[in-house]
Length: 478
Picture 1: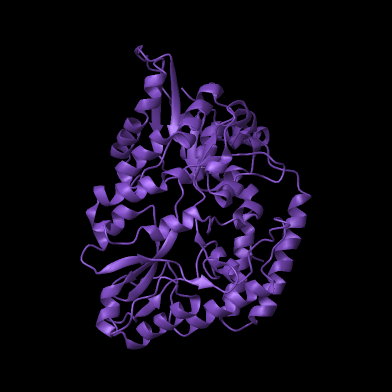
Picture 2 (picture 1 turned 90 degrees about the vertical axis):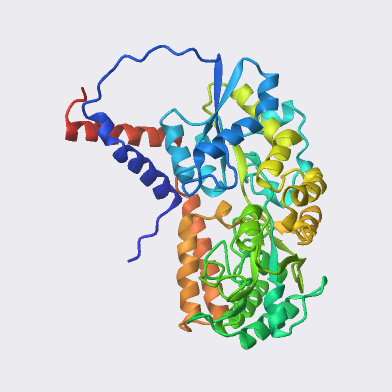
């Protein structure tokens, strides 16, 4: 029987891994004298993200730039300094540091389903929001909704608003004698153009040519993204009951039938496939938050961003990011930490500096016009690329984060992928498969609701048991 990893298991497994990988520290740990170092009175730990940070980037360089971006806040708090923490290791590194008592005071993440699973990982911001009379309407409503839990608690604020639209390689269309998309094109126009490219394109080596990669994608690897589901009137969860799966609805069935038809005919491919934009892929989902990569990788191509095609029910819709700021409830300087988080989220200085440094699209809706002005000035390649395709989605609140993981255990993803493989292989029809899938996920949700939640104290107790076991294995530490 397949073993499904639950959110509870994932958290606990990550804690155990962190302890085991640090086991060497329990053996012969010499207590060398540490010279006294003059430090500012208070140091806030801030785990922040900039384009290019992470294991594949240069954390030291990025962290230095991010630290510079905090200068206006530091100038107002001369007794406080900030330590930028590497944004590496995923959410588990934040979790284990919080459990170990060394967590950052505020941190960035894009895993709400994991970070909100235990009360001790992300503080309820409502008292602080009330104290500061903070207006949440300045953010994209759909993005902000992801951070509000069913009990009304507000666990985070937006870090930035990343939006996807379609990049179209006009050079490939020119070579095939095809017309560019119209500003008001539809999902049917998209399918027709994609099919024309796939039929007319020549293979590059053994790689076939695809018209696009929009139709399949997150939150799973095998079904349409939530925005496509919504475009046909479906969704992953019911809007009136966010704990109930909606994959068995007529809209979800129609969206999946449309996307599978294109994919099975080799007209579109999955966004994670090996097709190369400009060579074997004519249209690709493109995010507003990786503009530096687009400027470099597509410099030799003739391409532009285009408006998303309109769907029969949802209209022009797209996907947005879930990246957020959270406050560590165990911070020894909660009021100061909240003040820093509030400044990053609500005051323009941090987000404007992120625009200038990384071309990062802002969370504050009022800054999108400024973003449209700054980006072409800093990267002239974007002068004629139609950046307004992103801004229009943001301003009209037509970009929606994936809410699936907010309400479902990671085991639900395993269920979805397993059923999608069966539907794809013809072992079960789309209608029956999605109907059964919705029933399975709802049953899992009912079981999960009856299970006592994981608490920070429980995890700490398990950590102590593991540490004691390691000490017994390796002998007393020196």
